Image (cartoon, rainbow, N blue to C red; front, side, top):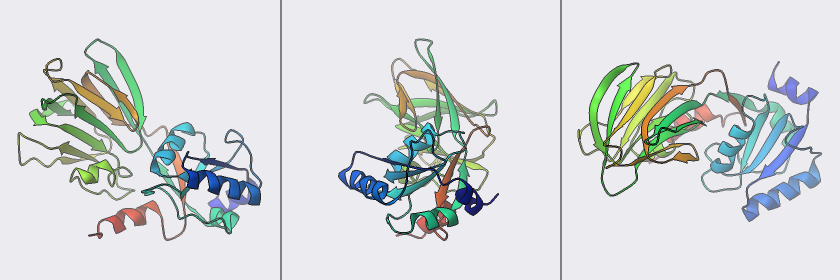
Length: 262
């Protein structure tokens, strides 16, 4: 069934917004123009804000089969469409669907506690003190780097490759590519290592060396855990979020366009 057929059969829409005044004003305007319901009852959620709101919404509706159409009332808005109150139903009917699978992180801290979280953008490790982190990287059970001295490390999905990964000089990945980007943050040794591109079925295990002396935090999108000792990451193909984009402005197009900005 096409998105037009789905929208035509079930036009139950919910509007949610960030706390920004522009987002709240947009929500009020849209609710006055269009019938709406609660997010729990909706088939499509229209999210008004920035990428932070979009990520929270993706986690909220994970694998519920609800679709999310974001409109930018925030700052960056890479995952959002342009805002307009006009012809919303037509835009939803014509929108293209992009399905995104998250990374599943399992982190164990120095106290023996285990923490599990999902990340649609990236899993990141950061040093907690003035001392650099020392990390060991194993891919599919084989140690590929015995010691990386750095400020941190990012494992990014294609959707997240244009976010913090790009700021850390990591590669931009085509949205439908079966790849992940592994990017160091300020590597000290080895100085010339700029990261790696991995298949999306890779099993990544990061060990924190001298974890008590050089404490490290791990974050999966907006969930952070401190004093980690090991971080295990795989992509979870069993769960997904479905994003809607205006024709010609799909996430794939945005990823390509981002590579030609200067």
